[in-house]
Amino acid sequence: MTEKYKILAKYIKDLSSETPDIETYLYVKEYISNYKLGIDISSKALKNKMIEVNTKIKFEDQEKSKKKSYFEIVYSTIVKIDNQIKDKEELQKIILVDVQNDIYLDLEKSLLDVLHNSGYQNIKFSKKVDFESLYQKRFN
Image (cartoon, rainbow, N blue to C red):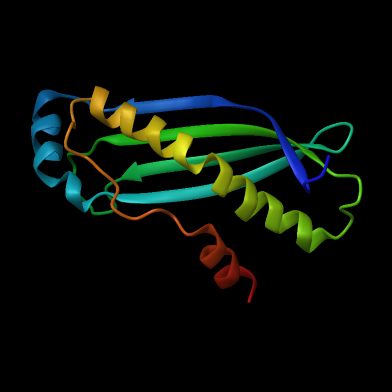
């Protein structure tokens, strides 16, 4: 392995799209521009220097409105770490930045497919998530 890690598998582990009724759908269709993207990353050590990285992405209304739709994907990535990697900080950066950058286009497309198939065809994300910047803010 010439790189620090290798992605062995990636798949949608869990998927949720909830719009309870037509009134909510019509309301959300008008106000979906107020929805925010949230990301949570967790990992679990497996055997033989492998790690399961779960990236949870939510698209939800953070306001107190009673009419809400909810969209969430948990995207699982199985990664094999190079034997030379021993430093905890380097491993954190691989999981929180490098792997995320590698999977982000697939993850974003999956979420957009869910949104479009849920009746919200005009949704686009104008900015890409900057995982490097998020990492720097968290650890500096």
